[in-house]
Picture (tube, rainbow, N blue to C red):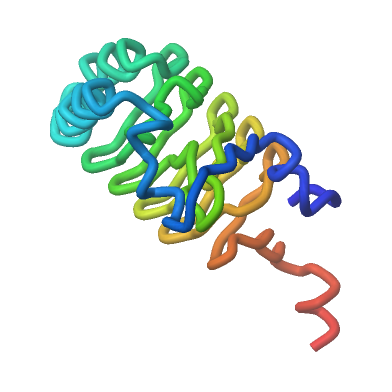
Length: 176
C-alpha cells in the first residue's frame, strides 16, 4: 500500500445532498433514472455473459475504459451508477463476483471517484474495490478482500481491509 493512507480520498469528489434524508434518497438527482436502468440491464448482461469479447464491448459501451485482453469474470460487477469512472488496463483480470465501486452514498453526501486497475493486475473472486482506488500494474488482490487504499505495482494484498501480504522469509517470520 502507499504511504499516504488518504490518497484514495484525494481522488474522490464529495457531492453534498440537501435535506435530512440520507444521500441515497436523492439518487435521482445524482444520475438520471433511465440512465441507471439502462446501465443496470447492460451490467446484468456483462455479469452473465461467458464471452470475454462481449463483456469488453458492453463495458466500453457503458463508458468504462477497457484495455486489450481484459478478462472480466462471471458475476463480476462494475459500478452501475458511474461505470464511466472505471479504467481496466491491458490484460488485467477481474475475478468471479468481484465488485468495482465508483460511488458511495453516505448520510449528507455521496462521493464519486475513478478506479484504475493497472496492466496485468489481478482482482480475486469476491473482492470489492472502493472509489478512488488505483491498483498498480502486476498487482494482485486476494479473493474476498476489501480494497480501501491504493495497491502499488507488483504488490499483493489480502484481507478486510486489504493489507500487503508478507513475503516468505521476511524479518517478521524469521524472528519468530
